Image (cartoon, rainbow, N blue to C red):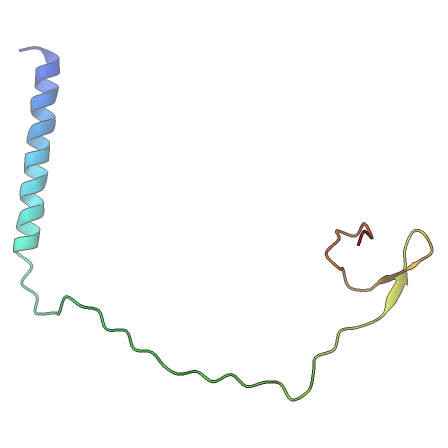
Length: 81
């Protein structure tokens, strides 16, 4: 018997054994738990803040002598709009 046939028989035997074990596990499952999953949902209410939030408006000088915002504006600090 050549080695290719041995490998083929070995792989097929492993598949048969794996399927047999899988079927045994499924057949042995005798739990009384229901198959469905119950998810409970709760109503949530959102409350709004009574005072509006404010952001700081301090400015600092930039390289060109212009004033730049104290907080970054998402331009990567390059000052492009």
